[in-house]
Length: 365
Figure 1 (cartoon, helix red, strand yellow):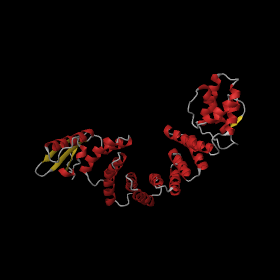
Figure 2 (cartoon, one colour):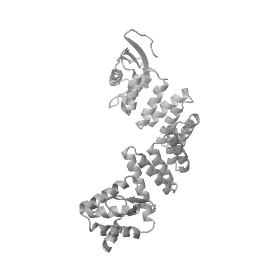
Figure 3 (cartoon, helix red, strand yellow):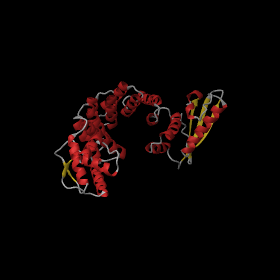
Figure 4 (cartoon, one colour):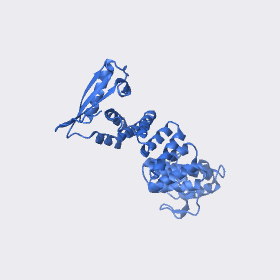
């Protein structure tokens, strides 16, 4: 319960809770017994430190007979608002630091919807899904149409393996707000985990309408298409992700998926590809008139082209090189690059394994 006592300098607030209501996980190990001197000392220190972090002062009294904790805290008129502090921590992804502060604020006002939601988000981000569900369900009990809480519950339930329950919460959220991209994104993930890829594809595309530049969604769409046996379409989405650009790890993931499909496609026709051997034979003969540094530059030039997505399945698409005359297909460039790297850095892995083709080409030169 909050006091309304206000002075010109500061506002004082008071709240109480029982010993059994305090989460001992907030205290340092080893976990003390409830009501013990160590417990009481730890509780007092916890609240004092949390309010100090907010620029506030707190007086904490523990009553052994009534098994109650009383906290009176004062916020200077010029002090930082506790919610602003929490917002900064959440924005920075510092969830571990935010939880104790939010817990303290929750004790102060157990029914505050914002605090309940933020606690749910933090616990979910930290993998503490049971606690996340507890706070979010309490929020929904008070506000049954809070679609943000439904999304949070969908994520938490999915994460702890309750896929159908997670799906239900996410669909409810979409029913209340069909523009919520996080609901669509997490619905796609939940459906994917259930291997319902056609439905997941619909959810991903709904999300892309609302976040057209999100390359993680482009990659997810490609992965769904692969699962549905539509590799050609998947490659287009991986190339779009590479072209759009973004976090390096996501761009590399898209490149990896392209390479995987290309390698699979390349190996479907047999153990040794005669067309690749032919391209390598021609390249090795050209290398005889080149210096090692020229061969290396050529290999790096092709690797740079490949970093933007090299189409090895369309023979009509052609590329030009500065280090070699002519117009080349993607498969030709891949073959030339492999042969070039084998000349300057034997054994170096450059994506698709063409070692068998290279050995055969060398035997024919």
